[in-house]
Length: 156
Image 1 (cartoon, one colour):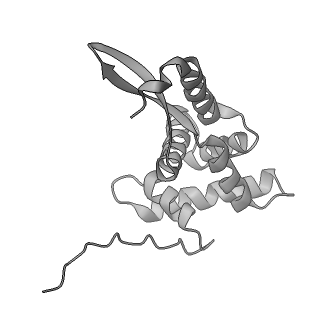
Image 2 (cartoon, helix red, strand yellow; image 1 turned 180 degrees about the horizontal axis):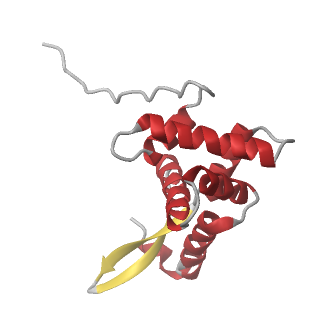
């Protein structure tokens, strides 16, 4: 009898740019299973980026923005002898990507009073320039890890 292994389902690239990263981002952007709405928001945001930054490819701005928000180290709580320490640890690639997407969407959802595609375009452009709320959050995480470097010997 052969062993049955569960294979992870491969994410299909989204249709317009043929990008798996964009597909993952759209899925995270989606509310209540309304994928067509999430796709429309994403595509309108990229169109807006294309209008505001005509010399650059919108998809390039998007991928570079994600790259600029990815954290390389983070702090995790570790209990040692009754005390909790904030231990800096390296972040693996999949967690880097999911944190970057989460932080960008969190920054977009915190802003109020404008259509989502405009807020998303603005946040992606500022992340591309290494500015904005998502990059600030990444910098704060890196600063925390740097401040707690003394506890790195507790890393597991």
